[in-house]
Length: 248
Image 1 (cartoon, rainbow, N blue to C red):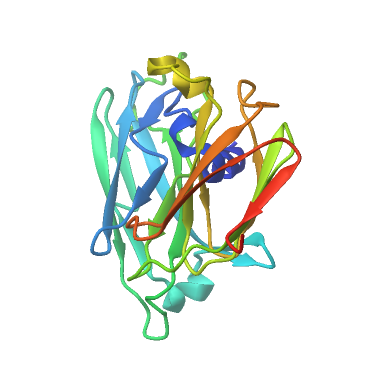
Image 2: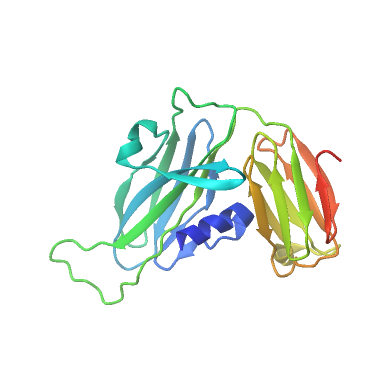
């Protein structure tokens, strides 16, 4: 389940489910500011939940994602910490998890650093406490943490539109945020949520994008690309079967 959530977060982060049966999370993607970020987990169940946090570092190799999980074997290479790493959350209460990034001596600060967290819940009952029969199997979350590069790099990309899907190849040095708009002219409010999407493409990533039903086979999709601090921006439109690149 968490792998599926992670794949979606790289496509359209605002539309990830924010509750998971017994627990909820306030965000599925955070960007650090001065090396700090935070997630808030809410326990909506009638029983306490034990929560454990895992960390994995993500990198892009040949256009695909590579995952390196934090273990005891690579502890000297860790650059991200989460506090608390494990805790118990009482019913109907919320707890903050503080994320801190400390670069290793050999790590470059001119590139984005990307991490995947895993919040794994388990019903918690103290010794002698009655176990409720309403306990459900709780599903965890796998949000993304991006440590932005010190400076935005110029936009460089290739992008194509094939009707039901789009393809974004980020050839630049930092991640790209792409806002996709297939809405008819004049459409406003919540109706726009069905025909717009936000995509985050990591540097070097060749990212396939599965469009929402209301966006598939649109006559035209407007694309707005921007870097983290919006230092570089570019706007264009794509029609089915067409492509566009930063070199045009």
